[in-house]
Image (tube, rainbow, N blue to C red):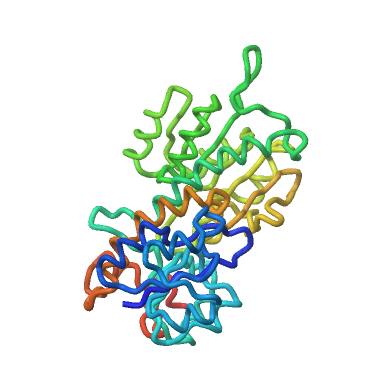
Length: 353
């Protein structure tokens, strides 16, 4: 199969879907791999590294999309890329279409087949292609939140771990999945007092095992409403695969948070789980609402492209090898990833679009 990897054009998106070692693996299975010139630059992989592993380098996105049958990229197609997509393409990338009705309609009208990384579900009900980036996003959320709490960044001047004779910073995390647990682990490591909310007792038990400064609580609405107003840092990490995230925190509850406190909503790709959040970019990552600093960057792992590209490539290669074989749509995990097939919307959460 002819596999194409375009350069990412989303703002400050430095990841590349396949690193050179991953390309080598695909070529060993008799596939052709086309890489757009410069696609791996921000991840530290130049064109020569790809050539050395057997890739064919093409100069432009137009040439890349023309040459390939299977398009493997990181982020959802941007406006400048839609014009290059064809009905005979299979698109394999993060899509998050539940929060993007306009993009859903555009892909439907093109008539292509789209498999979303974030809705591929394995036999153990895990999200193997979302997990690596969720892990990174959770870590970044706590690191970024800690930094935004500095006074010169607009925060309330709190050191998350505190020091002797001071209070510890208070961190509230919504969701104890991969992203939420990673955020909790990082925040706890800084010494913060961390409270994690979820409906799954087993996940809450795992959160508690992180350390004595982590509390796992059932996600009752009133319990969340009581905890959020005292948070220095609120992290949203709620995920319903393929669907819009539910709002677990209302604007009225956010209004009760201290001035200079920080909200980071990892769920923003799926619409956000906090009513006051909205999507932002690395050009303007934050905004202030009622004195609370909000961070809603939709491609958080793009800040560490080398690490993220290595992790993503390792997860993708086995699935790309299967997508390149006939009958892949009959395999349950890949079938779960099918958002559109030949222009027909298949994912239940998108049916009304």
